[in-house]
Image 1 (cartoon, helix red, strand yellow):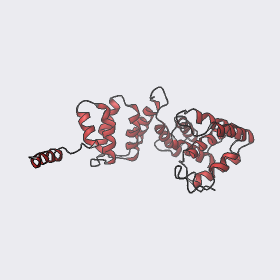
Image 2 (cartoon, rainbow, N blue to C red; image 1 turned 90 degrees about the vertical axis):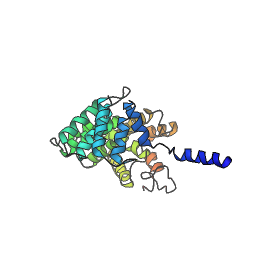
Image 3 (tube, rainbow, N blue to C red; image 1 turned 180 degrees about the vertical axis):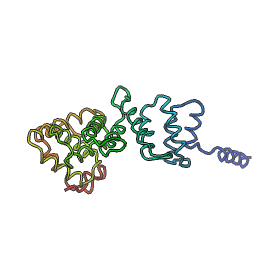
Image 4 (cartoon, one colour; image 1 turned 180 degrees about the horizontal axis):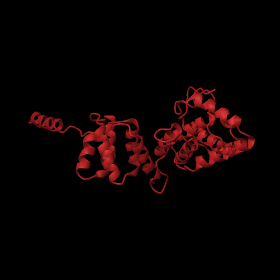
Length: 263
């Protein structure tokens, strides 16, 4: 009797395989939960749990956009920009990026990554005439929207001599420091940050410290500085900050890249 019971349970369990993420989302979408459209697009685009299908990805992204998801326009723009499942269409890419950049989520900024892409279009003359000032304006907006790629783009423009105005140097330094604390930069970028810092006047260094502290505390749920270190930053600019954070720290695995052996 027990053997029969165990056999029945085994058969039942064997016939009820766990539902995959793709199956769950597909079922939900078919049941009318259109909010799953973007996620399905992501799975088709990456080939996660299903074969890669760029056309299906584009279809689901389009459905998500029509359903009111404005930020998904960034992904539609990227697929046009890189020619994913279609011919490269820079005009269409720019259109989608502009929609996403103008959108807001919870009263906040537009999509920062869309702004980064717009900056790159103007920076390198992709579908539009090269316009370094316009590129910087988009990168700057992206930085305020907390898009990490924008910080690096701005610093590189400054280091490459592509920005004429000295007034942005303090912001360049502030954004650089934010990314270093996030561990997003390489050791070369760390040395570039030092180069930027030591090229600033004392007044600009103080402004950079103030801007950095303002940016850090604008995100209360993601504190990168303690109150004490923020106070020291304001009083001593980045001198002590470099000494404490850009030394070789092979044992520090929580912040790979920027904080590891950047001497």
